[in-house]
Length: 55
Image 1 (tube, rainbow, N blue to C red):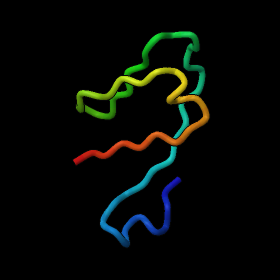
Image 2: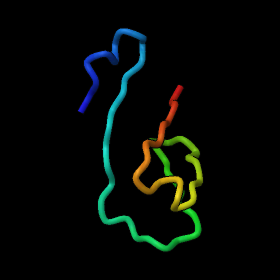
Image 3: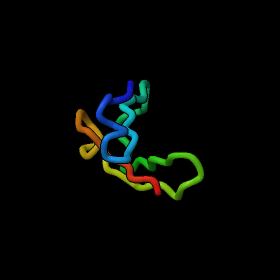
Image 4: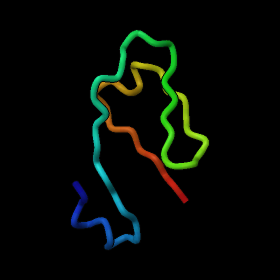
């Protein structure tokens, strides 16, 4: 789903969810396209909004 306001500030915003991710891991690497990605702890990802800035 995209936000209708996305183009007003020159940014695109996409909301998505990833299902069936195994729980109980020490770390999770989130990677978009060919970027290096970022490592998160489970508590950082659980039920919160995570923001990625791709340039």
